[in-house]
Image 1 (cartoon, one colour):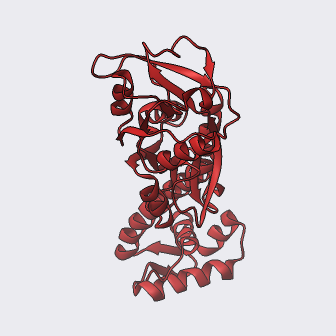
Image 2 (cartoon, rainbow, N blue to C red):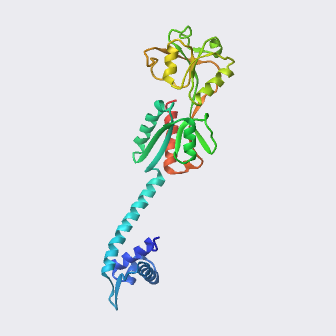
Length: 302
């Protein structure tokens, strides 16, 4: 344990530079006893004689004192650097953020969000990692993540807070040659007799199945996959329709097929994208800066 203080070191350096306690006290604008006591304490805890006392001629550094002065100057310089670093951390100028991303959201939002934040905060290091909804929630509670870009459902939310970022509206996806493909909008009732291609990802699966039930239809499941692109390929191949909230920029599927995305007229509840965190994490400067940026970034795009 360190038994002396930076203040004692500063008083020691002042005496060394000024050549006496009285002169150092004037420069420091404090009492002479305060300086003398600091020097005595410093010599006591270090076990060194730092000064030679000369009657009427002040103080001069001993050999140990000269070597210790060099260490003190290095310590003070490091302390000033730490203070600057702390100020930068508190203001949100420097630091790091461990960002979890739900793997369905990652292809659509992760790179753009991270790149845009790096552009305004180049000294803040972002460490992204993709995971499932439940894994993200658990890592937040275990303090292994600072934030998670995720949905507001599909995982245990105990101990977490959600900052809303976007409300994604469900859409119908059919094959390009489907009889309804030319429509601008349809209702779920229009699809009551159609087979269903299930996007069977955690969180998404229960959300979409609840929507079908709320719309009053129970289509038979013709195909299921945890991959959004596999679902789109199955739809393009004529297996049935599906519901999605994410829309890739192209109607082409990986296997060369094509789909058509159609709006729904039903007043269905959206799937909410949120920035999840533990309670209180937004209080820090860096965290607050990232959370505000994420909200603005999504608002400009959705």
